[in-house]
Length: 248
Length: 89
Image 1 (spheres, chains in turn purple, red):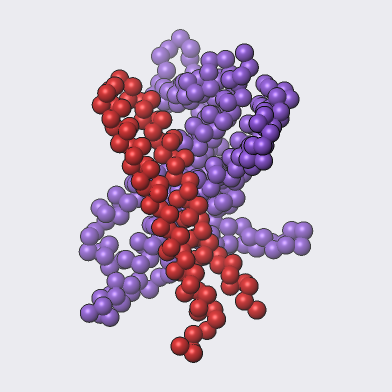
Image 2: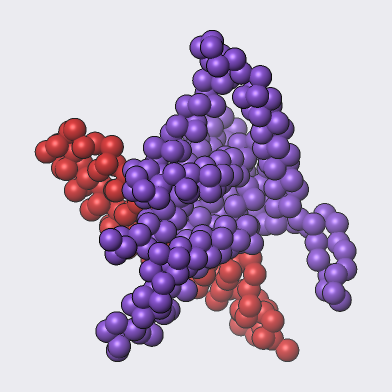
């Protein structure tokens, strides 16, 4: 029985492709490197952002301050206001507005990367290089602000209960690691799940039809991606804002 | 038995190991369920604070998910980028 059913379910004719594939190899410093799917996805997304920024900049420059704003301008103002509110709520009135640029950029970038699976790209955030880069930016910001607002206390606090110093120091370095792995793991798990379903169960999908597939896409790409974007930005804000607390 | 190659044995054991690693998914599942349950009861007691409770719950759940994701990373490495095959000389 199983011998008859299994080939029917598995006869897809296509391999499961969830990995990163290189398109174009080049040599740099004696190493062979590749232009991969992540790079191409990133370039497409960044181009889309640049075009959006140019259009938005044009709309803002040509805005008439004596008239009520139009549809596009209204949406832009809403977005900026949301980001401002988010940072001010989570980082305090005094410092929140300084970080709304970074948080807004981070939010938009990660969100578009995560939901780019819906547009047929392989999500660039399912590449550990991308998420580690993002987490390292946050790591640098955390410690820059730590030194800026707490001076040397930022270092001496690590040794406060002296026996716990190794744990504290490892904990500081675990922050970017766990942040990047969280984003990477969540998006990659969605990619792998959808890849397995596409590659291994095409006959089942034919039976149940596309509603199941669109539901899975909505969950793994849309919902999960949005939640992880929110979580990444939230953790960034919380970790940076920790440095402000003991100031007064 | 004698016609199992060394590579085949390593691949088979790696597949079993990847499956075993994903058992760690139990922990985050239970933890997230408990967090969601308390979140629901908190909303029931104080429906006005729904937004704050939701965001706190989601961030907490995402942090609790980390251990599960470590196991997922281990499973993915075992399947797609097996480091043990390289040890075979």
